[in-house]
Length: 139
Image 1 (cartoon, rainbow, N blue to C red):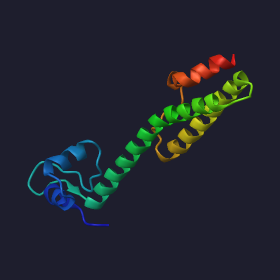
Image 2 (cartoon, one colour; image 1 turned 60 degrees about the horizontal axis):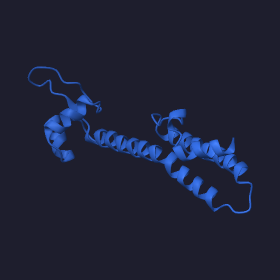
Image 3 (cartoon, rainbow, N blue to C red; image 1 turned 135 degrees about the horizontal axis):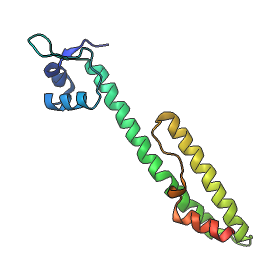
């Protein structure tokens, strides 16, 4: 673990402006010693903890981006599988594929939620139009 540094020195060690580091602190960046007013009472920040905090934020953002794309990507593949099916009961297949989409999507989002708790669950309002169409065909 590296030593805690005043904001200006920590910002230099991180390669960012002091104002940027101050903004990160306001946004929840870890602080080794909380600062107070007065000479010698400056906040101290551990640059390594700041790096880890930033990396965790980047991972969470990546997980949320992926979680947003998963339902649509899987829906497109599911509809394409339905379109390619020949010689089968397409009405029954539409229901099976819609259920398969739901199981695959919830399984993948559950896995992402283990990594990033803020990943949303599949709700009724997040079912893509393509899957709703397959559900209607199956009825």
